[in-house]
Amino acid sequence: MIKFFRHIRQNIIMKNQNGKYLKYAIGEIVLVVIGILIALQINNWNDERIQKTNQLQLSKRLFDETNRNIANFNLEKITALKTKSSIRTILHLIDENYSKVNKKLIDSLLFNALVTPTIDFNNAVLNEALSTGQLANFKNDTLKNILYSLPTKLEQLKERETALFDDNTAYFVPLIYKHTSLRQIDYQFSGMANEIKKSRLKETDNRVLLRMREFENVIDNQYYLINRLTTNYQEVENLLTNLSKLLQEQIDVTQ
Image (cartoon, rainbow, N blue to C red; front, top):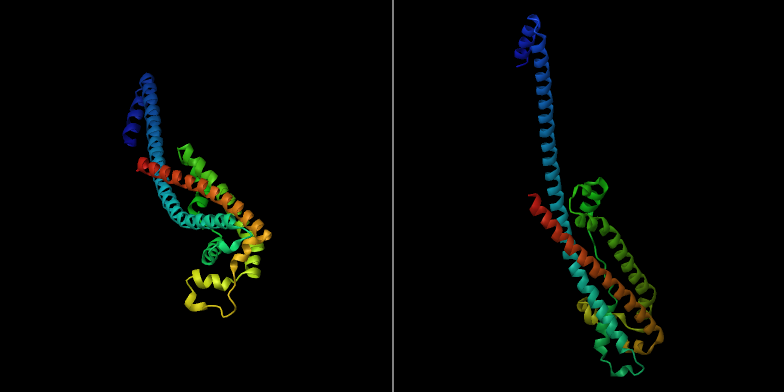
């Protein structure tokens, strides 16, 4: 093809046909420009195809990661709500006349109240997407806003989990060690009765905690912390649910 055009150009020059040569030159330039534009368009189509494929793969990975986190979150949320309910019940049972409270009930409530929930989130895919800037290619602004804000929300949640755990360790557990029989509680409710066996010491009435001002203060603060944490859990749950929905929509659109 190149030889063909060169031959035409040489014939025009040899015949000294300047007008025809000018038209030919313009035509050749136009053909070159058209060729460049076509090449650019093909390159753009290829880039868009690659970007679309990458977005689809990232969306699927984020979707799978989000759903795994939701599953883990739901399991731990049950524990958190159980802890909160037990702490609230203990708070309502605190009374000088503690003898009217069932012994086994207070032991079971103490067993549940001692548990501090900790949710293990796996954000490897999200962290990778954030560090590489891949999220900027997503078209849905609501989706991007959730993904950008999620690490901050999870950090706040982790801080509140830590606050509850630290308070539990510093104040609640020492009271249990000092004034109750932890073995008695574990023997009944931990599922390890056959392993730890029943204590041969004199049975302890764990209800004595219910008449202690220090215990009331500790339980009151524990309830404040667990209530704040479960509120945070609800916010994160809503965020993850919306994220999963938006990712599914983006996958459906991109495929």
